[in-house]
Image (cartoon, rainbow, N blue to C red; front, side, top):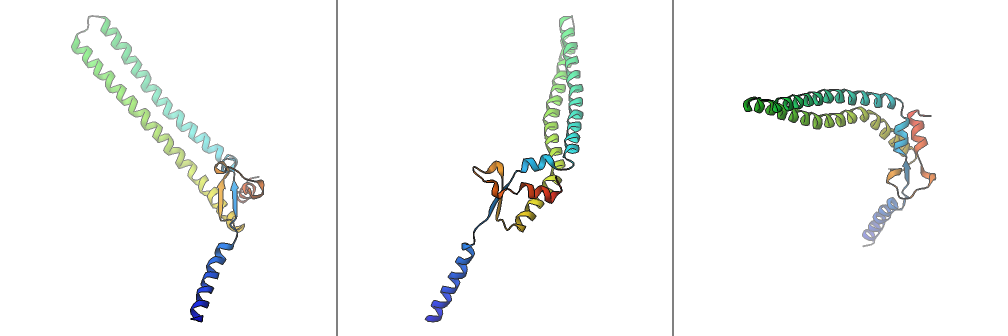
Length: 167
């Protein structure tokens, strides 16, 4: 009976010993780190170039659509047959559908491109946060935007920037 009691007591002591360690929390300013990452400017420029390329194609399609509308209006004011007007209406409708498809597809493509370009930067930041947190024995590291209250005592932003080689 004494052995069972002693064994249970030891198990409980070891179990509560793990919980008695003080949990360490910290925060980082992820946005600031991201803005100061080397190469982020070229990422933004690449994204802007891609966006401008999509906009140029969209503008061409919009100009073609406007031209077809003007042509239709000219034909409709004259003595053009209803068969020809019907063909022109179908052309305009199809062109409008293509334009709408392009707009929605290009928005998704732009988002996909942004995620593709930013992923390596996010991975580097996460790895640096993990390394700094492990070295400081922090259990949780939050982004400052998610904290309702914080002190500067546990701000790891500068340590993470140093880990990334950001001055």
